[in-house]
Amino acid sequence: MPYVPSKKTDGKSTDREIIDAALAPLVESVAAEITNNFSLRPIYERIFVQTATALRYLNNLTCEEIQNAFAFEPAAITFAKAIYDTGAKYGYEGAYLGEFNYALTRFIQMVPQAKVARGDWKDELRYWLYAETVTALKHAEDQTEGLGIGVDGVFRDIKDEYKWEVNRSYEIAQIIKSGHCYTTPYYNRVVEVVDEAGSHIGHIEVMLKRSEATLNIDELPLQLVLKKKN
Image 1 (tube, rainbow, N blue to C red):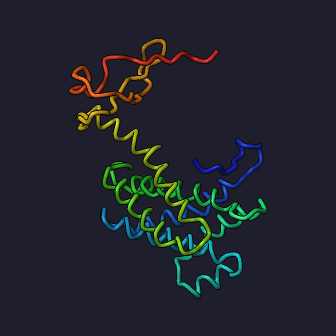
Image 2: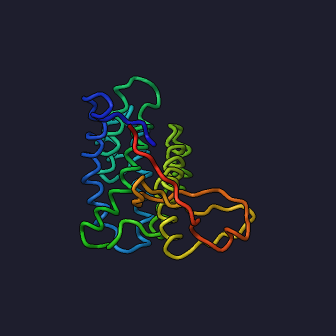
Image 3: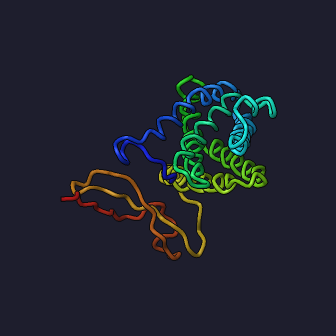
């Protein structure tokens, strides 16, 4: 999770608001450009690499000079400038990396939301979208390693967080719907989480050693009860 201040942090920080404002036109542009499922990956990859490269040169070039030198998408350069400026005020090397993490983490959520709002897609998440997003992040990691500013590690971190924060929950929903497919010596099985009144809250996974009792079930016949804080 990127550690980027907000008004919740201290009542006054606007880092997230600045980055979100720069994100909006870029998200709309990308959402309009994606015409089919497999066009998403190269478009994401281009935006990721352009943003990272612009970030690399903002220390000694203006946005106009970067545009003239690389012919990048203007919205990507503006986006990179917002990331650079919010990080620069902290006064230490690499401060922009948390901002970069937050910015791209928001980007990969906001584009699908924009596609749904446009009526292009019915759902914000499908497995193909997860897989294509991960591929774009992986390719961007490889292509930006030579920039020497740490962004390649951020792309890897975003990919790992996306798996943990989003895909795992999606996978549990699919397990409940259609069944598990792991029968290895060790595996996870789902347990329902409820409140003290027995109302459904969600699910978690329990790590198990294979046994006849759990091998052929998807959800354990148990419930974890959460007690409200006093």
